[in-house]
Amino acid sequence: MINPIDLSRILILLELDISALLGYTGAVFKKFFGTQTGLIISIVMLVIWTAIPLWWLTYKAKRKDF
Image 1: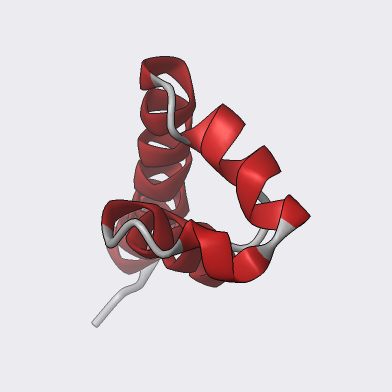
Image 2 (image 1 turned 180 degrees about the horizontal axis):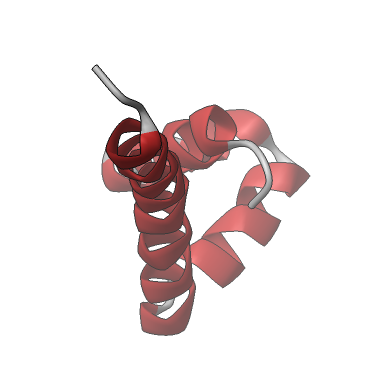
């Protein structure tokens, strides 16, 4: 959940149904991220990873005197 690149990679692997290539780790990921709750949590985390930098950028831009 901390690294958005890995989170996106895991979601793509699960969507392509090649999580078997990851072995036991793939089974654990499929058990959590394959559920509705896991998918919602991961999408929310990816939105947070996008929203916080955008908010910070707009906050800094509004305070800047161009």
